[in-house]
Amino acid sequence: MKFEASIGIEAFADDIWRVLTDAPGWTEWDTTIDDLIGDMELNAKLEVYSRLSPERAFKVRVLEFSPPTQMVWKGGLPLGLFSGVRTFQLTPGEGAFTEVTVHEQFTGPLRPLFKKLIPDLQPVFEEFLTCLKKEVES
Image 1: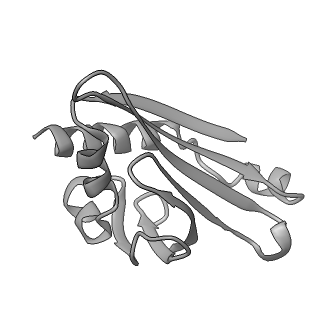
Image 2 (image 1 turned 90 degrees about the vertical axis):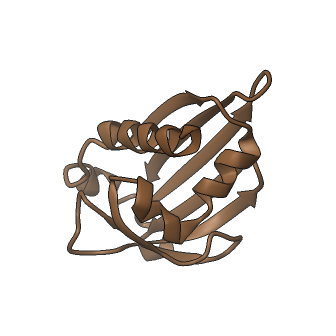
Image 3 (image 1 turned 45 degrees about the vertical axis):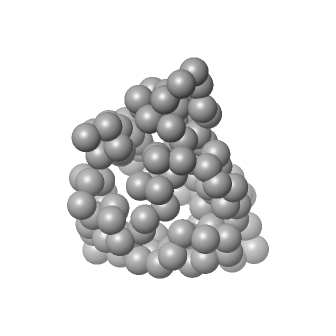
């Protein structure tokens, strides 16, 4: 099970990266979350409170942090029984233009069980990217 969305943003990757990695600032522009607690840095632990499931935090770890092009989060159950890996990819283009892609892949032996519980993240990813674009370009 995989979800993915992309958007072009009229900005340099460094400018997008500053917004994307400012965890306390997310609640000011990202309408898909209620809170994001933690520091965006390699091996950091984050708690993400999504509007899809406000009653619980999604706990993830920053697996990769490669400014200003890629950040990877991973969360799930112990022993790899079920995990989700979310990747934020920034691809610089000509001038001040950057393609931003977010995708998430779910794996593990319990994936079929959880598949029924996970809502369609496609609209959420699209809304997130629209919010990021609006914040960066304003």
